[in-house]
Length: 113
Image 1 (cartoon, rainbow, N blue to C red):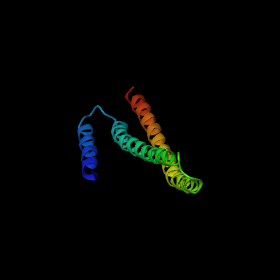
Image 2 (spheres, one colour):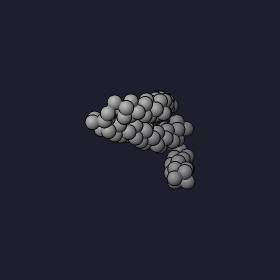
Image 3 (cartoon, helix red, strand yellow):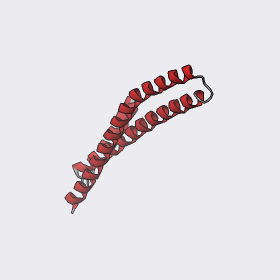
Image 4 (cartoon, helix red, strand yellow):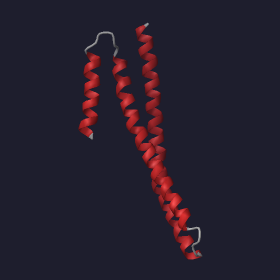
């Protein structure tokens, strides 16, 4: 997977740097768009796994006795404490990447004109 990711970035980089009409920000845009795709996938995976686990806990707690309900509540809190920081971090990183793409796009347009 890492080889594939790096080969795509390298191919895009080489194809863009060989053309004179592109500014350096165009290379950064391509790199950040690729990065954004991987970050979106990571964010969606984390939220999907977390939501699936929470749904399962809610399903099992439907007709459970009080002792089992308490155990499931503890598990739910464990999952939340494990996944919530990771989800927040992935969301923050994705948002920063989107800001970098916007900045580089505006900068690229400015340098062309």
